[in-house]
Length: 99
Image: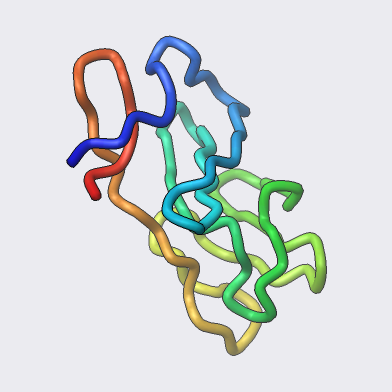
């Protein structure tokens, strides 16, 4: 089942929005004109990531500063589990998730 989150026309560089999906917060961001979906929580201690800083394709957690590669989800500077990246799904002019 496809769950639409946003219209593709609204996705531009710097876009950042949190969505509630089945009791989880999902963060949709656009980096290098590519939409990225991930759980809006740092795997270290669960801090929300929507206010994290971006440096290219690196997202830094606002709580402890841990850096994560948005391509792989890997932690770059700390012994931490990776981000939980989600595969985007598309239906017509919308991006979302296949549930």
